[in-house]
Image 1 (cartoon, rainbow, N blue to C red):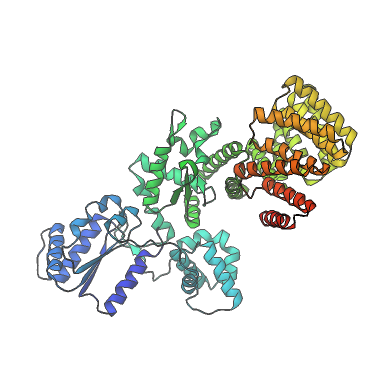
Image 2: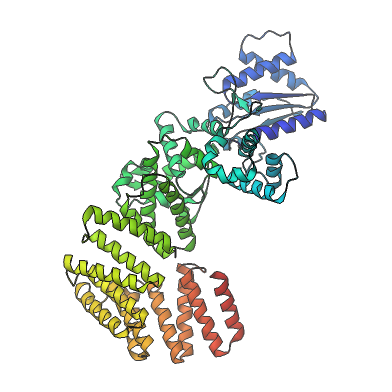
Length: 616
């Protein structure tokens, strides 16, 4: 990618080869455009045969090739910045036919690898980065720690490190002060070039060479994305990527829209054909971006594309936007992430971790903008996701802003308002804030009964939630009353085998088990299990939760073999569906540990306990 140090590394190689007299001649050619390449060849021709008169640029190319092809000594041609794919096709016309010579090419275009052996420049090693930043190998401990932090902030990118060094030196700024102030100085750092700066290039339309910074070197890649409207569209696509976490931007983030009207104007709409996602069209665009070293991609499960950007490229793409355009990209990112999180359900831990990283990145942008009081529906989705991830403070913040917005826009008894109230009740219950949870549930229940009626499914869900809260407090009679009311209502409204009905059946089983009403509990669990197996399948997470509950019940009764069968069935299913490190999987492993310990199977118990502990 631009700024990785290709030119500087090649130049250093040339200087060493010159000192060691490895070549009779070394010619450095500017291959950034066809015109500059012809100009460099003319300069080389005049050095080789000063008296020869050249009629045109092609004559210079022919002369250089003829002279070098006749030499028996070694020579080196360096084609620097051969970045344009169009120029690559005919580059062989500039190569002399002589096996004594060597050709070195620097390029951000991945297709140049086809010309011969290639070396991929990635991030700088830490020791090299420290040497470049500090221009010395010493420094006290705090300075070294601050320098390492700076390398992390800059993604170990050589040009960024050198510009930071120039910035710090010019302002006589301490490294620790630089770390503290980097967030608001980053655009200045990316533009910083000292008065003497060897990294220069003749840009299109300019009459003299320009000092290249991170911002200018990446800017030169964008016009190569395509012609006219195509380049503009793809520029918008890669800009949208910059609003997500730069690592693991999955294709699935954009392939589902959930009927969200906000996404009709998203840059990703160019990959939709009659409303359907076109994977191949998306892949073609991503391949082009990777060929220009603007990003990297890989294929994950089911051939889904996963994209990564350098962190500094993400920063640059957001910075270069006009302020008036930034909200549109941020809104599109929020809408895509909302649809994605709504669709993933109980996905594996990696998918959810990636979703959390994207949510954190996007919300940092929201916090610095004035968009925080809109996208109320997205806030509910994000709040639910935070809650599922155990991020209770973040969830409460999302819910409270959404609640205030709904109350202001629709009133205290609107369905959106009451749903948010119920979500806050769930959150407070998760935190053990029992009084707060009960207040929220009762407020939601009163409103739902008034708006929808006592037998509506939303009303019954809130009644079930109150049952859960009372059960957790040990208010067994109150819990049983609520569960039975919810069960009767759901059986009538949804049917005996609806998943919501079966969840309440399962809750009654838990309540009875806690009271020691073993037979009643087993009846409820078996009813819930049979229904879930029929409706959801034997390996659904809800089914497996009931299997695990039966294992707990059998263990409490001393039915060791039955308990072990249930635990192993639950464990196998959860490992397959959620992965070996999901919290539900680890809970079942812990349950098996306890069972083995109770049997005196010490080795087995220790293995399981250690596995559960490491995972948790």
